[in-house]
Length: 90
Image (spheres, rainbow, N blue to C red):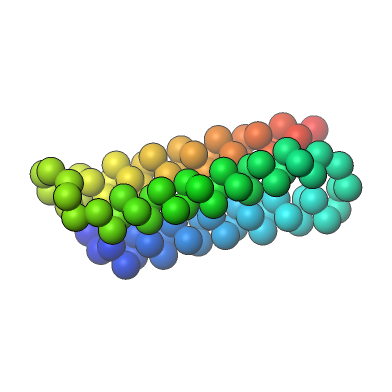
């Protein structure tokens, strides 16, 4: 994924999907709202960090390697947040 634009779209899509899922759970189950708000905040921070890394042109090496590292790191953070959300649902 060599395009900054495409990578930004993926980051926005994944973070928006997580936020929508978390808010839907919050609407259905009226508990653990502070924990879910913390997960949403962590997701927003991860999105901002990923976008900042994508926009940063001061990386060393190829753009593809840099973008792959940013994408991998962001997906790991979103996956961890989903794991926490699923644990709350149990």
